[in-house]
Length: 315
Image (tube, rainbow, N blue to C red; front, side):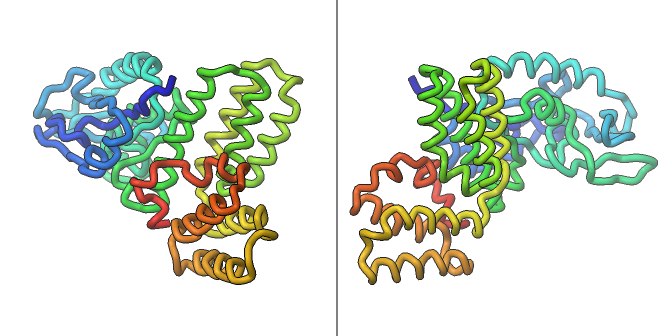
């Protein structure tokens, strides 16, 4: 059984009128594009904790490591009210099987990066919204991003790849949890992990090789940590180039001289930032099919997310 890919999203990004001014920040890419592949769990911490719509604007103040949530004009401290909601909401979300979360940038409750924290009237962008911070603490391996950062092609591709990867891992945990099945999962993700972190892939290999020495719960926990933390490291052009050349090696003996020259030229142009990743990938997939390379056909790296999202057209 394959479950839907469920992600949490700040409710205002889905078009819900929950902003402090009664408005929304509808993000069409999230609803119209990602909505074809993900189901959404909308969350607005400020409305959720009992604040009205519209409401007085708030901001973070004090120590950026433990800021207070203050209303701007009336100077009311809403920290405890928000913290109570966060604790209850996170207990609720533990049952949602989330595979990712998209937060609203700059929000004192939901901003994930560089949220303004005021101290003595001076604002420094070094804070995290209270709800976002609670989510990171409770779900450290969950793929999380802000909607603004998804405009960056590399960040967008990395985030969405991690979401699909986390769903595959959760699907794996629903099956037969044998060492043999883990070896199959590990083998299928070899090239994907090499593109993100060859070092972490080697460490994962050592873990799998000694799987019988560990209790199952510890083995799976450690593997999941390696898997998700490794994927947070971006697949750079240099690392992707190494993987593309590695793939070519599987059927180098079968390629004609002209095919070798063409493939090396395309990989070289990708390496030099003259072509997007989709071009050498498409050519390699052609040769994998032409020469019926069964091992490569099983590699997730070739299709880690739906081609319709066109993520590799821009990296």
